[in-house]
Amino acid sequence: MVGLKRVIRKTSKFFMRDNLILTAGAGLGFCSSLAVTNKLANSLTMGLGVTFVTAGSFCLVYPFKKLINTAGTHHKISLLMIIVSVFVAIFGFFAQAFIPEVTSNIKAYIDLITTNCIVLAVISEGLTVNFWEAQKKIFKACLGYSIALIILAFLREPLGFGTIMGFQVIPENIPRVVLMITPVGGFFALAAFRLLLRPIFLKTGIVYPEASACECATAECKTPVNIKNQAKVINQTHKLSRTSLIAIGLGGCLLISIIIHIKTTPTLHQMFLLLLPVLLNALFFDGIVLSKLLGICPLLNKSRQIDAAWKMGVAVIIVTTLSTTLNWLVYNSVLVKCSNLLSQYASVSIRLENIFYLTVFIVTIAVFVQIL
Image 1 (cartoon, rainbow, N blue to C red):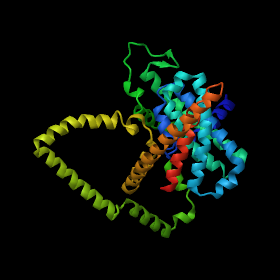
Image 2 (cartoon, helix red, strand yellow):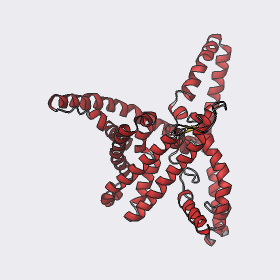
Image 3 (cartoon, one colour):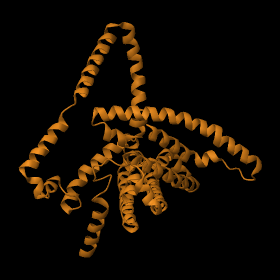
Image 4 (cartoon, one colour):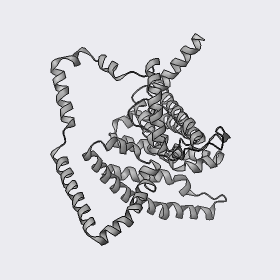
């Protein structure tokens, strides 16, 4: 019994101490972890897909690690995304063949494994160590990610649907928590788990308290000079720049003037009352970020600073607008026409737009990101 407890504790520490979803504060992989965990089948499929794509992509990338490491950061990320997109397409075909119902529910998130922060971060980190050490890191990160998805699904699916993998676990006469079905319910489930599991993790030594991390600092960091420097840095980080203050002031004045103008003009007031439900519906129900949680990772990380937030917003608008136009031209003018041409000579119908669309999209987006 003692040996079993020791094994369980070591295993828990291995997968939970640096778990990117449950214990770490990096905010990586939140898009899929909050969106697909309303059902256990979706969580298992996503966990398997991330593990397969990460391991396969790294095995293909590792022989060329010197070439990739010598390239700049932006070139490196673009190359990794192109290679990862190939394995995502392979996994998508297998998933569509064997589990079409589950795949249809999370198709968008399977394609987004290409830009999954965890996949790119683990592969990039693995290129700095030897092959087997990198495989250990990949195994730890991906299985920890899968375990986090499964844990969240075990809470959300019974509360939202009353079932687990199609088996009824909660009687039908008990009301369902509809919020747990929506992607936003993932926020509440994740917050509840991190709140409830943290005391257990601290007691068992799986994670460290913040105080102990401060106590374990080196003696050099405790000198008065360094303490003063740290205090100056902290004070500087809490101060707003002059540009930010001017932007906030102008924005506040503009908002107040708009509100006064709307209230004093009857026609504008009526139009505002008519358009307000439409705007709220577009923001919270039809909006990509708040309804499907796509792109929630950069939203959480960049929205802490005004300068970084508006720069990220402008960059996303420019890249999306330009890449959408180019993708449409390539898809309809190249892939579809080549597929029609091949179908005239080949005995088996081969649709290139279904095979290479994701890779082409990633390449065009990467090109505009490099230009920007």
